[in-house]
Length: 231
Image (cartoon, rainbow, N blue to C red):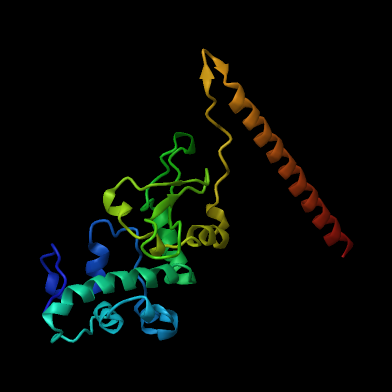
């Protein structure tokens, strides 16, 4: 019995996870290691959130009973997709998961920032909520630190909870080398060549705050150097 469909000619030889990741729009997901899924400690609490949890887990691991009643097949497949998404949200916060997502980020698999002044900066998927079925996935730009809706409707339909609110920021903390310098350029609204006064005031405050922050960080750095020498 095959309770999931695929356009692949080799459908019968596919594992469920391979089939799921191959669906159009699911390229934001990385492959969760089977060992991680088999460790029930990693799945603590998910049985209360997913209908037909046991069958859904068996389907993901390709050990589902082939005699499952037909009336349950569609429900189990839907539950398996949801369960994989919830597992994925946890997995991408582990060392292995972060590394896999880092590789996808380096290849710009998640797309680029649509903001012109970010110069094609690669983006990361992020959820605006950790509660399933509340917000769809968005794209976070580490340069301008803003979020954008995905261009593709297939991506826009993905639940943001499958990536969570923590992932992109933890990735940058673990791999600080991917952190980019913040854009120094900003768009200045003008009327007949003259800066719009309201925006000028806002930008002056932003520049003043930025300079204060730089001075504060520099003083803290010099203080640490002095303390280290004295020690």
